[in-house]
Image (tube, rainbow, N blue to C red; front, side, top):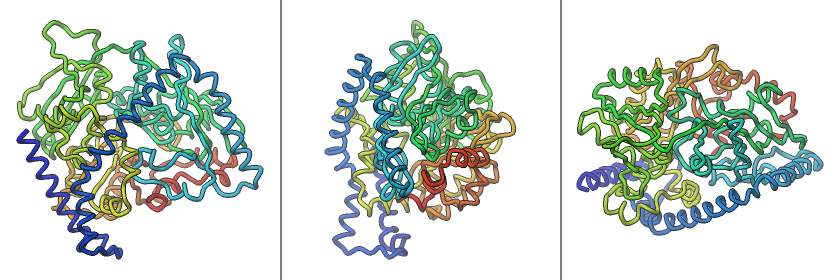
Length: 534
């Protein structure tokens, strides 16, 4: 508990430092953002004591929403009502698109889903002016254990899908950690997990897409029936059509996983251990760096049942320490260790603390007493956090906070960690290896290659003089030189020309031309660039 209080104090001081910088002489002041004494006090309270609002308003609201979603999904799944209604819901999407065509194709189209409901840190400016199409598709449609597939609608979440499959002894091969991530976002954007060194990105476990195109027609595509459209859909961000369903591979699963923790105490050892683990036959591989020279490399495999004497750690229980804090404890012992985890607890291990982002919102969230009393309400919905941010709070976070996932060849891991340490000094840092096949599309590789996702989420250390645009530009340039890629849910400051050099648009441009998408949808860059988001 003492250590939690020390972390609380340290993080409060850092946030307070940035608050004063932003108000007095930082980027906000330079942009003409001025506040009187009363406003300064209000902003101080909104940042430093935001936990009050989160704890007493957002947590109860999030709990009630989750409760409603759980029972709604359970009833639909048990009654199998979703498959019968899917066709009529898709027809409504088609009707809206045909209406857009009938009315003269005025402006681009996008989904009507509010920007605050997405997982991106920002909301799209385009949502204010585009023709909005209601795509209310939220159900699991079919679990086919004979053909090893599950058919789902695009707004099905990872928490919802794993809860539907696991009791039946099945899982999708890649289950991204955060419960609220949706199938549509993971396909049209991207998704990754600690099994990706075996299976690739989320798109690589998808076998079929159903889409409503710009003319209102409905098509179902596979890599055999229409390879161009099939491989162009991932990373297209809804700029080729409206995704209405996807068929995804499923594999048998057990109820438990044996997870191994290996502490490392130098950068060279971390790179060596992580690279070797990524090339191994372990089902799950992940790393968390707590400083440039200290981290824990984790490997895991499914097991049928714990053996006598095995320790079972139900890390998903409300009173358990946050997973990344639990992992950090192995640096103290300095010993390699193993334990048994329930599979679903492992899949969603980073949900309760939203990786480690929640410690900057509720700094005492990992305190034992808080976990015992209020841990069952955690975490607040990310969408609710976004919805309740004031403009001033958004600007303050923009200038004093970074969220980035950079995908670089694993051979560039060491220099990448050194670069992030120099430019941001944000810790922890998440490491997740993934296999990039030589498939056509935005992420086009001449041959299969192992990459690593480097996830940086948090408040930069005051010593690095963090500047959002300048710092991110340096990181983007570095990643491009490594022939890597940037996840596009986060801020991207690349120019359109730089963006097209990072991502191969050859197939994408050909498909957009063939399907007459120019009037119907903007290009990907015009939806994801910093200028397109607020």
